[in-house]
Length: 121
Image (cartoon, helix red, strand yellow):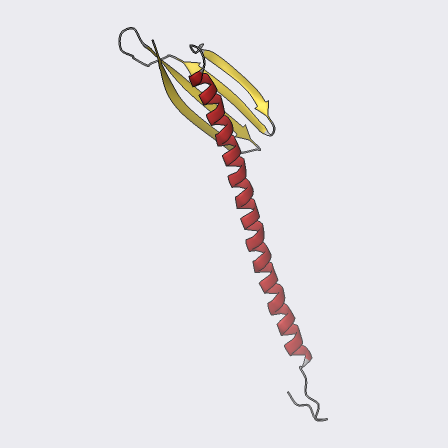
């Protein structure tokens, strides 16, 4: 805008509005970046828990005849529990089903449970 002295420039109100708009844009941008980082961290935790649970189940399924019972432990930030049961599973004559359940927890609310069965003669 032109002022009385003939100089061109921005008024203080225009500059303050531009700063306010830029600040709001930065807030929205930072909120999006923070949300993306949080989501990525959550997915990484879940993937780590899934890998641990699958490993526990694979070890139990591939080894010798399962022993019913529970085991638990920790691996890094994950707490795990492995349960082997035969309750309520009917199998063909001469065979036995074993239910293998792996539960993995992390943080305050992170929890994953995987379940499978093994047929043993």
